[in-house]
Amino acid sequence: MGLVTTDAVILHSFKYGESSKIVRMATADLGVQSAIAKGASRKRSKFGARLQVLSEGVAQLYVKQNRELQTLAEFDVVKQRQELASDVRRYAGGAALAELVLRFSHAGPHPELFEQLVVYLDALTSVAADDLDVVILSALWGTVCVLGFAPALDCCARDGEILPDGAAVFSVLDGGFLCRSCASGVESRRLVADDRIALQSLVAGRVSDVGAVAARHGAAHRRLFRDFVQYHLAEGRELKALAFWEELPWTGMS
Image 1 (cartoon, one colour):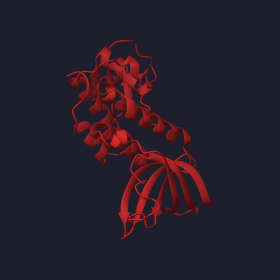
Image 2 (cartoon, rainbow, N blue to C red; image 1 turned 60 degrees about the vertical axis):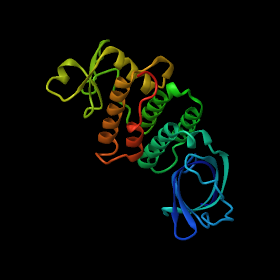
Image 3 (cartoon, rainbow, N blue to C red; image 1 turned 60 degrees about the horizontal axis):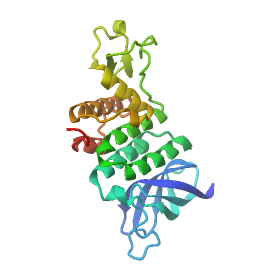
Image 4 (cartoon, rainbow, N blue to C red; image 1 turned 45 degrees about the vertical axis):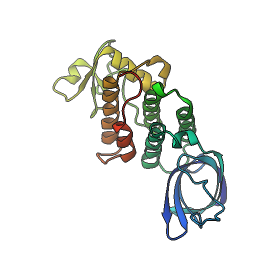
């Protein structure tokens, strides 16, 4: 393909050899790509401090098909998002988003995923502190949905029966809510009506409909998301960035 210019977000970066770096990027045109930035660790490198995780910019890549490691020629920063780097909670949320995209996005272009990632990262830089964890959780659910793993929330995950309003049971293994007959004898979690509505709003991105979430309920929502992702996407493997965010105190109501 030769030299390709594309919008990109740095998802991960690490030193390679004495003077280079390997960067993993979400790109608008090529999906997730790995590239070597030669000489990036040198004091007078042309990359300087540009290759910061969660930075957004325009990347120039020398791309060879059927090759796992490309060559990064340039990276011109558009947004460095210093707000994320200066706040551990904001950074933790951004890192969890980056981890989902890096670990579970499919090969090839995925423009909707890239566009949502940019929108979510921008939201994390400006959202009020009390609303931060609700926004992060909604962004994480939104990313899972774009990756093709949306939970069944309006009808039974097994037989498709439309569910009545009110409390409902959620089965992680089945990937959503279950009707009364299907839930019999199944390991599940009962969500009261308010928590069910909150989950539906979080997944749909209607953050303004969620309102304040008490710490106890926030912790339960985070556990539910973590278990869902580990079963349906990670196949039981640990997600370190997600685990770090989950360990931080829930923001908002106590």
